[in-house]
Length: 338
Image (cartoon, rainbow, N blue to C red; front, side, top):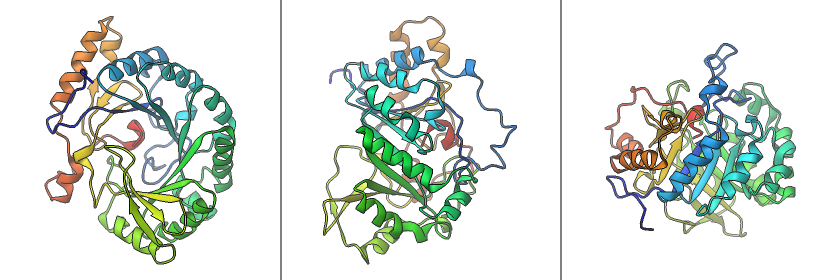
């Protein structure tokens, strides 16, 4: 497209991850640990969060610059009141090929039919264990497994395509790799295993707790042989594998040991309207003041273009090469939705 923009590494802008809230009803250890995100944590007030009008306007501008996919994130996006209305509005933007949501699934039973009717067709549900005791330890005692699985079933019954995400931590839930793989193979939902990442500043990340891509593959392959298959599209973050005895597949997102920075086409906008050019970014660029300054769309479009043209982020590659500053302050994953 003639309006496509490229960063310094010639990566196009194709995907927008749009956070609609910084709040979540879980307290997962690797994302929002309870001791930090407690009852007195200063979450954003409503006047600081972008309105649906502002999100729609911003999305239209991003689409004019090459974005084709929009993923709604949080926090937990289903906590945002009237979210199906935003889905409907984004679905009407000419040029948007795909809209999806990433959710913890706890509210999905309630909202799945309404989301489908609003035009949503895909949902990704996070679930890190099928064992209630471990799942409770991981999510801050906020939900039972059954509640999430009920949401998955409701989404599937409503017509939504469901993918599952599992963050694997060595010594925490790696014993659940095979049970999760078997369960979702049987229920015909693609499961993606995610290497535990050093996102933000509060999750106590240690390399010793990373279950690597190869370790995950080896463990599954011993009982359910796999073969690698081609990516679905340029910039797909998960490496795809298919079970040899089935047409079902899994994916592995290996930001730590097999980085995909060279193909990254994602921009992230936080709930208060800051643009982040990397999941591991230390700063964001304020777009909210432009949205509320009565400036023309061209002003915002030019700002985004300038930011993207100067983008050179490749944190995961630098980490792998020992060149990243791991002690530098990074935006919390809960703030920009992963």
